[in-house]
Image (cartoon, rainbow, N blue to C red):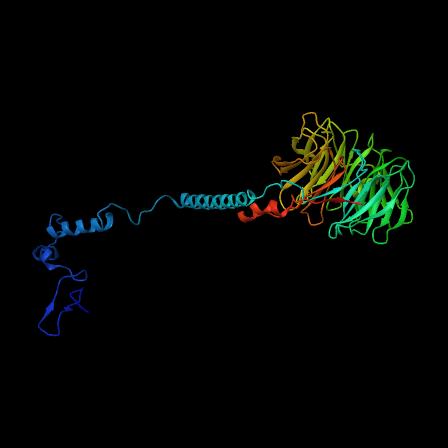
Amino acid sequence: MSRFNGDWYSPTRLHDSPTQYHFPGDRFIPNRSLMDLDQAHTLLTSRTREVCNSTFGQDEYRRKLEENLFFDSEGRPFRMLVFRGSPKSSKKSIRFLDEMQQQDEAEALHNKNIKQFQYRHLPKKESRVLDAPRINDDYYLNIMDWGKRNILAIALGSDLYLWNAETGHSQKLMQVDDQEDYPTSIAWCEDGRRVAVGHLSSKLQLWDAETFKLIRSLEGHDDRVGIAAWNGQILTSGSRDKSIINHDVRARNSLTCRVQIHSQEVCGLKWSITGNKLASGGNENLIYIWEASKMCSSNFLHRFSGHQAAVKALAWCPYQSDVLASGGGTLDGCIKIWNIQKGTCINSIRANAQICGLEWNRHHKEILSGHGFSATGHQNELCLWKYPSMSKLGELKCHSSRVLHLSQSPDGSTVVSAGADETLRFWEVFGPPVTDSSRVSDLDSLLSFKRSLIR
C-alpha cells in the first residue's frame, strides 16, 4: 500500500503478469471521475471562498453519506449516535431499570416459593393413634408435654406415663395414691432429664426421668397448679390461687419471686425463646407480659385485654422474638397476634371455636391451633393458618371430642393432639417442604395408621 497526493491506494494484483493490474476504485481510493478538477483549481486560486453546492460530486457524496448515516442495509431508517436526555434523566432511567430488575427478581423468588409451597398439603389422617384412657377432660389443665429427648409425658387420671417416640415403649413415672389428688400440669426441663409435675392439691414436684425418682417438692401455692413453664433453671408455676411463682430449683429455698396480679386462675404461662419475657394468661380474659428482671416488683410490661374468654393457649413465634400468639376460650374463639415491642395487636382471626392449644411451625411461617367447643359446629378439629396473613390452609378432623392439648416433637416435624375422646393423635404436619411433585402423591402412602395403648 502506498500514499499518493495525500490519498491511499492499493492496487489489486489479478495475475502474476506485471501488465495485468486493475484499479477498481474501492473505498480507499477516491473516484476522480466524480470530481470537477477545473472547479477545484478555481477554488484554490480564486480569492473568493464561495462554495458551489450544485456540483454532481458533492450532491452524490452527500446522498451517500445520508444513506449510510440514516438508513440500514435494507433501506430502513434509523438514527445512530443520538444523545437522548440529560445526564440527570439518564441517572433516573438507570435507577428505574435497577428497581425494575429488583422487582422482577423478587417476583421470581415469590413465584418459586409459591410453586414449592403448593406441593405441601395436610395429611389425610394420623401417622399414629394411641389410646389415652382416663385423661381428664378439663380445659384448664396442661397435662401433656414432649421433651427434648423425644419422650412424651402424659397424665392419665392419677398416673403419669412416659412414652418413648423412638422405641414406642411407655413406662409409668409416678402414681398419686390420694384419690382426691391427681396431676394437673406437666413441663419438661430444657435438658429433657427432669419433669415438673403440678398437682390438684397445690403440690409442685420435680422428678428425674432417668432414675424415676422424686428429686424434690416445691412449696408456695394454695390451690391446684394448672400450668408450669421452664426458663433455664427457673421453674415458673401458675395456680388457681391467682399467683405466679418463680422457683430456682438449684437453691434450698427455691421461691425467688411471687406475683399476684391476675384476678382469677392463671391458666397460661409461656417464656419467650430468649428467656427475657414471660406471657401469662388468666381466666379473667387478660394477658400480662413480664420482663424477667422486673417481675418481682409486679411491674408488668403490657396488659392485653382483647380476648373475651379465658386465655390458656400462648405461643411465642420462633422466628420473630417479639411476636406472641394467643387463643381465647369458647365465648371468644379468636386467635390474636401481638407485637410485644409495640404493645399492639397486629392481627386477629375468628376461629369460632374454643382454642385449647397453639403450636408454631418452625419449618414454615404457619401456626396450628387445636379447638374444643363451638357454637357454630367447627369443633374438635385442628386448623393450620398461614402467617402473617392468618388465612386458613386446612383442617384436620379426626377427634370425636374436643382437643385438649397440643405438643410438638423436638425436631419440629410432628404434632400430637390429646382429645377428650381418650386418644393421642400424631400428625406429620410440620415437616420440611416437598419440592418433587412425585413425592406428593406418595405422601399418604407413607402415613401408616397404628393404634395401641399408651400404658
